Amino acid sequence: MEDVETRPEAQSEAQARVVRTDLRTRDLVNQAVASVPTLGLQRAAEFLAAMNVPAEIAVRTLVYPHRRRRG
Image (cartoon, rainbow, N blue to C red):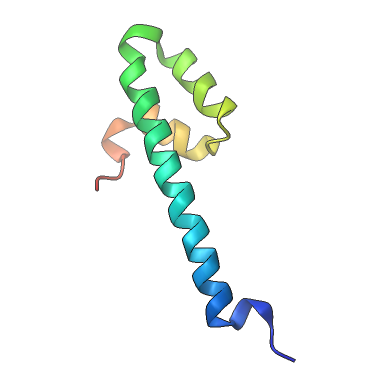
């Protein structure tokens, strides 16, 4: 029996979901980073948490901006 995980269609579907999440996360992070000067770090972090951005990404992008991914 064929495993769902090994089917090329399933892998493509999984990759498509990841891409959509990454674009959404990218936009949310950009919005939060842009709001830091006016709202502060804590409010930006609360926003990302409310939008279900993984804590690891929120910390890396807000506290360590030099670790942000480019592109």
